[in-house]
Length: 438
Image (cartoon, rainbow, N blue to C red; front, side, top):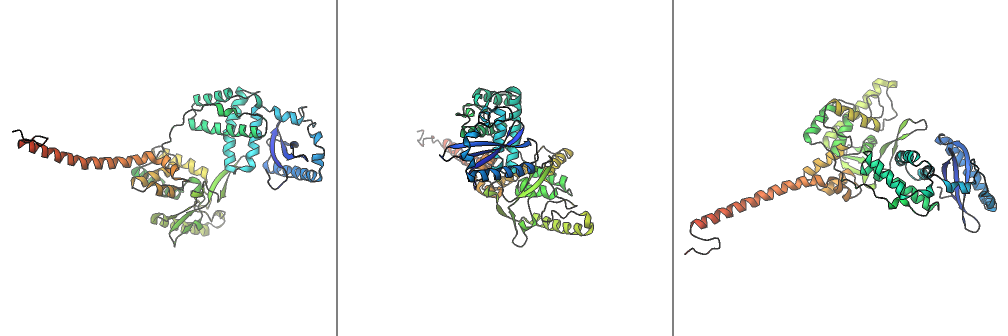
């Protein structure tokens, strides 16, 4: 959607081809829509589609400001689409999966690339299921019963309640958009029941297990990545996004202000990009530079400069500004981090752990050391205290057990001394009430 224009538009797929759908008001203030074909197939390149859309929008704008679009509005509803139906009629006869693709395209300009890929990935399974089980069901015919069957079938297939929650979120948003576009009147997903969410309990390593992990990665190209993850609890994207200018050796600080993310290119290959928009505002944080990490970073910086000089043209200088590079200057990518970490865990027969669980390991050690939950929230960059509490309250309970043991021992000693005194009184002929037997 383009807020600077006197109309709105989205791209949509119909009959395997891309269209530009314009939403505007006529002279009487009535809302109108117009579909314009691009003649480009659904699997066309993004750059090609973007150029064609810009051309169509520019032409539509000229028609709009000249008054031709409004003047000839009566002819819009009579335009014939490829399947022989008027476009005004065709748009209300979407199957559910056809509309889902339209909705996906409508949100593409409004979200980050990685967010859209998440929507796209989740939506793929939804579309595949309905194409197979309810292939011809119209958007207007979809009821809560069909959606409920989808949720039940997904749960029966072994998917977690959390995954089904994500599917439901996509469906709910898509149908909410359909209501907004006046294609349906009721969001049927609001009538469904989903599996009960199980409370998440993070996996983590203790000190001994982390020691084994550090030994396994000693000398490995990912050693510095693993150590930063364990010491600072940084997210994978935050570590790969660390630049040398984020390290202030004089002041002794490290600032997290950029992230790396992976998206698919036009040819389907994965490309690593960088952005200064982190997960939340609280993710932007400056932390003290731990002496051990400081020394490691200085050593890494000197090594990079040395390798760059002796390897000359064989050294990649594209990522000189970034910390996490290999001995050839190439970036250590987020995908490599995940894959290589899992491979090393298997190779060294360590307890199964995801790379992200090093973040949880950091939090658990901080809690065990008596660091307050609020301080841990700030260290990890959680948006709210509640997020931290929800993740790690079960770990905090372990520290409460120590308090319980301490109070039990203290009061237990008191009880023991009182009991000893009572017995002494009884031996002297005094009752528990303090009355004499005589």
